[in-house]
Length: 213
Length: 213
DNA sequence: TGTACATCAGTGAACGCGCGTTCACTGATGTAC
DNA sequence: TGTACATCAGTGAACGCGCGTTCACTGATGTAC
Image (cartoon, rainbow over all chains, first blue to last red; front, side):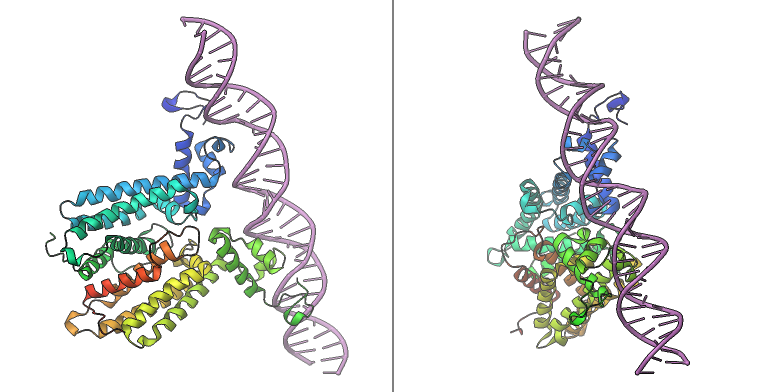
């Protein structure tokens, strides 16, 4: 395949190998989990020799970390889009963001695995950690906005609230929404389960959802 | 090592190879994750030839499934011990059970990985699924007991409550309490985070913790 | 108590396989003049 | 516009390795009589 570059033109060079490897990695991770992805097979799928990937990634872990980083970036974008600056109302937007969390786990199992289950040492990949922090930041700012609507004396710590909702969403996503064979059966949709939990939690914080459509 | 059986006596037979393989698997999973465990290395660690494990397990997955099943059984026992039939009060016991969930994730990372992150197809291992269901049953019955203390008209569905608390505990355990390199930093202990979340959630259900010590 | 025999739980050598990684190399591309 | 050259991004062959799995085998154990 090395003779067809962009536009079908003959080409010794692949032209876009880095992206092709990322894309192959996503395929393989989605099919066989983070452990089932190998450098050699990613190269094969991209149509290059097994030595070629080393021009773009130091080793297998570096590729995996790049996939995870991209995953966090996409995740951040999706969460931010769902939050949409809290429109039409902060509570409605928060529910939508919960749905986006679950949708991401379901629609992008490869990214999700690379981000949360690949066993990458987050502390050793600064950019990965930062990307993760930015994604969490979307949720934290959402919680700050919601807390700000409450009377000054009754405001819970937004950071704690964000961690709680993150954990709740992540637990439901991991146990019930992921698109792999380990998914548990559930008598309702993960979205319904998460929405109900969030409403109860907000109620417990003293945030009533009466005004919500 | 094949010549020392129980009591140091010479022995061609290992004597307890099945258990030794399970124990080796736990070691290896704890060190390198579920993917880093191999049949061959488990055999080596148990001091037998690479063909020996086939006398006890059909293949690598069968061993992994057995580890996961044992994990769920231990998990069930710990949760049940923490719940202790709701003594001294159902709410105090529920908090203790949450702590047990996190402690298990931290103290038994190998079991935890095998149970939740090994990618085993739960549906294809009936005994594994049943063991998981029994562990969840402990939490469900705890929720039923708590719900039963409420006025008849105000009782939330215990099943939903159990799923919510399971997801919350699992999310916090996965993100913050697991003893591996992927653990995220946190401005408080996972236990504190979970306890606070549970209290807010119960408050939202209309369960006040005023009577709690 | 002794013996013959069946069964069990190991051995150890061998196999094919795919992996990660390296190496000297070479075709393609871009740039200076 | 053409040419020389540096750089880049690939090749393909090779390596050592550990894995899963099989095979005929054999030492140890248990049991019938």
